[in-house]
Length: 299
Image (tube, rainbow, N blue to C red; front, top):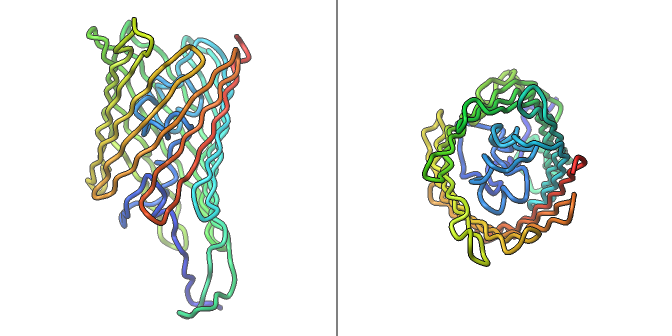
């Protein structure tokens, strides 16, 4: 019987994470769509995508049904995929989906050595159902219930978490949102429970700054903190809409001493939308990419 297993816990180095010894399941904080990845998530409150149930549930609000698929290619063969759908229901929008991340090639050892005994794969899954609706003329609310699963080596655990958010469309054409994500718990994994990264976030969006010009610019800002570790970070994003079919995006994040930037583009043709994001990581981590595809069956 092996006394211990050495995991290369790559989630401590996944793009949106600085090293954090106090919380786990960092995949819950990864961007779920290419638009979100390119703008550091600052437009998630107005994204109208079913995958917003995993980022900011009030963002699922839409008047039409929608299907969304996203694929992440991080580094060292770490990949993620997400699928969701939404439809108008109960005076609001109902959405459901899943988010899956796997880390292959994790080496195991029973003693420190150059030669590994073998390799295993870690898997993380979140399935969720969310609902959002207008509450007042300028106020909307949303919530998501998530079932979580993690698998490491021969151990697995389940958990449950809730996300809540509210959006206020201020008279000054400013969108303001407050969200609380990942409130819940995990079952013990090898006798130890994984603490969830509970995030409190306040976001601001100034849309359509140059509405009458050839380039329609929107800017956004997120201020966030990990409730359990009190670690804070800032995210800034921008979207430049050149036409109804073409959008360019950029984002910047400062988390502790870690800086991260990203660029992206979005193309929409009739009922289809394709988005792409490219991350610029610290030296040695390469250039992770993300692709998202959306379909509007009702339009």
